[in-house]
Image (cartoon, rainbow, N blue to C red):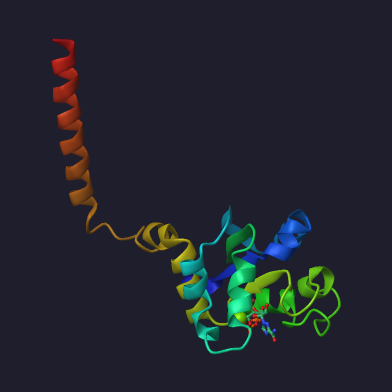
Length: 173
Ligand code: RTP
Ligand code: MG
């Protein structure tokens, strides 16, 4: 899996609370995205501050943090050719009133703060955001072709097995 074909998406608290999750997932799947990871979570404050660090100096920063931690969100890793731009196009402009008709923000957003969804704004940002929310994604996907430490992990496994065998033998005696 190529990292440039991945983006990070979030269904924000307003859209989850309004029960738009199912409709948004339907749109995602019918627009050619594969959902690689998906989880419903309540983001803690520290994670939210890291996620929105780029907006630290903006006047709406505190409001943004309080909003995103206020209730459950759905976080997703999405896969598609040109994933970042394709998802940004599908969600529309930041302000739902300015977002094109048929976009997710136009359909489900209320105002610039309560705008239903998030999308990474570049491939670099996508990687950073995915690492923040789905660290296992990279351990699994990007090391899967690398056999270099297979021997080590096999050794560890067999050591553990040996210990277990010994304990099991003891139990039986
Ligand atoms: P996002 O990061 O959520 O996908 O949105 P975006 O790229 O379209 O917008 P961005 O400039 O990154 O802003 C992040 C979020 O901050 C809120 N915002 N509030 N009150 C305001 O003027 C204002 N401006 C931005 C929005 O919820 C936006 O999604
Ligand atoms: Mg943004």
